[in-house]
Length: 553
Ligand code: ATP
Ligand code: MG
Ligand code: MG
Image (cartoon, rainbow, N blue to C red; front, side):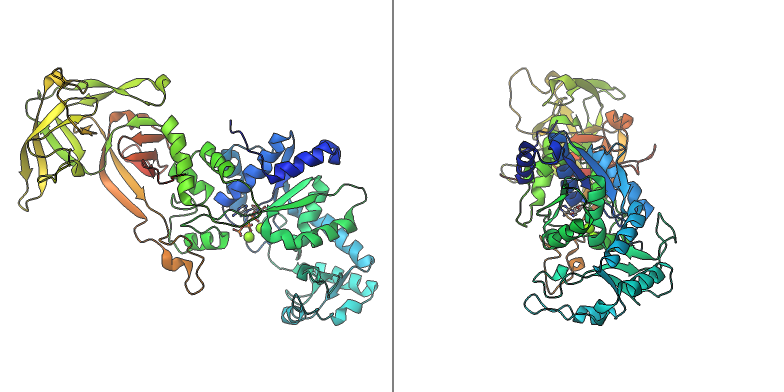
């Protein structure tokens, strides 16, 4: 279990509990719009909302903020539920949709009209926006502002009945066109959209704006702490204004803002992620290069590694950008503790051990996880012909190259010492095979005479193995902040080498039993997991992370 550090939101919650506010109840919500797949930024929000409730014996709603039918879809609803569950959180029977409240929101809008606090404006969008003013210059009041209640009611009902076209009129809250807060200058609360909704079909052709829906949903669900990102700080007076019009008891949800997560070498906006998918720069939302939760899952990240990362980065009120190396550190830390070790060769070079009996298969004992003695051992088959990594051999090595070269002796992990006696080349002079001899006395990796060999190489039997495809990933973008440039589009920073596919790899037979998403450490190479594309004849591995940690703090 992750121990969640105390952050400023926990501080607020604790103070309120101690003061007896809301009877000590903590009730949060995670409110995604189903217009894309969740990303690592959402994971932070999920961990914060569910984590805070867990910490204070509270509960959390999952609420789909589905007020814009033109961008939303049930595919996204399903993927969001899968991702939240996979991260390890449970909303129980508290699944809600903003669209569940369309009727109540409509009635609330009618009430505002009746109280003279909302009006139908039939000016064009351009005119309305030109009347907004600036933070230092008051806006211009719309002529529609003086309509009577009866007129407004009639027009709003006709909007609902579909009598007008999209853009022909909107419903606005009547607040204050001179407010220093631009969001209080008669914000639009309903617009006409003749798009079928993924849940309500064509029942509605008017849809509430986000600001008009969110706080009211919070209120109706009894949310105590409505946690959102900093850009909504300026919306808070409006959030509170609507709740003031709505509430009939002392209870009110409290909006609290925190800094959104930004990560180096990627983009996080759903619009941009959608563009990467739609224009085939990646292979779908769950491409292992994507910062989506489904992409990270497919890449080999574990729920615990993401939860730990979320906790480690903390919760602040200041926007910043987190080094992606910290995310990589979290998965490495998890897999170092938990991943089964195996040997795999990505770029094979054949080695024939000329003094080893032909046809013999020797089962050698290997450690499953040196970090965890309980993981036990397995056997690895050793034969006369094996593969080693091409770059573990050099014909003319520089000084300090301790791996294999003509005449040199190395240790084969869990097996024997071997010495290179012959180098076989093709007609182009390329090394295609090595001949070596082995020392039968060195079984298990030590020689009785105590002679030292510096290098230990991993290897795989030529006859006893699983052939594999291995996908190596690099960062999707070459720039730390691909969408942080005024003069350049983020797509200009796409890394052309973010995916390298190796199709001639060999792994020890142990991985035959592996299922999709199982993780392994390939000794000396990194962490790899089984891609769901794998079939009985072609097992596919994704490189989750390299072994070396570049996170120095
Ligand atoms: P985008 O701008 O990528 O479309 P969004 O904020 O519109 O993101 P929502 O589906 O509305 O996406 O987000 C659901 C919840 O997740 C919101 O409470 C939002 O504040 C939070 N969230 C979204 N992005 C981040 C992020 N990068 N870091 C932390 N929380 C985030
Ligand atoms: Mg949003
Ligand atoms: Mg959005």
